[in-house]
Length: 277
Ligand code: HPA
Image 1 (cartoon, rainbow, N blue to C red):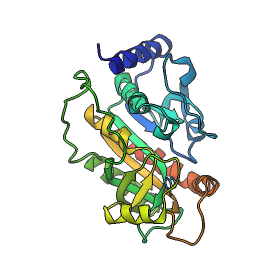
Image 2: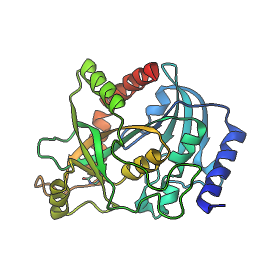
Image 3: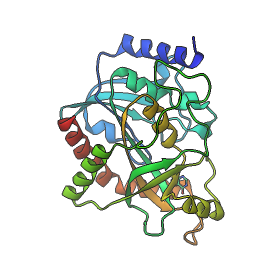
Image 4: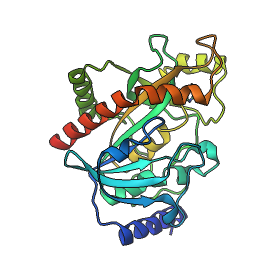
């Protein structure tokens, strides 16, 4: 059997042994949102450490566990802490949690992250609804022999971010009085931030935000036929767009500052998503 699939099945068995909960929505928490899961009605938790073979994040401030519970009656699984490609894991490990959440039953994937704005119309603290993405700078998670049990060899990527989900999120933001920008997200490997010329490249290529996660997760999820939506917290303008050097501290600080607003948007959007689907 395909080694990647075999590992996934082992992780799934481990989850099945420990958890009796079927989520509808899978939510991945980005920087600043780490404690969001603690505000929901928690039914169970599963530490990544307790899943044999599961990749465990090394980034400070990133917890590592699945939380199972309800957001206003919508059954969710939340990833408190994601694994990044720059940590050195193979791409198949980076997307393993996403695949696992689909196997748990989640049909909808809600991705969040902190990102650098490359669009001059953006400001630090803005939220951007992800409309599309550029994943071409990191290895595809679908590389290697195809896992037919998950999806097709050459999956269509014409609408990665579901139109209905996007429209729900837009309406939700409007009802909460939250300004929501829109744009394309470009994933680079990191962990270094970009040079000013790389930021210019991202902009020329059509990106509005740049980050180190998300797009590969969306590729894997799309391969499996999940409905996907995503929001970036623009934690900073990308390098070279201001005269300030960039630090992880600044990213964290802005993400923390707007987190309460981000959380209210996510809660209401997931409630609405749960009601219609
Ligand atoms: N670049 C890449 N990733 C990021 C940034 C950035 O400016 N801000 C937050 N994540």
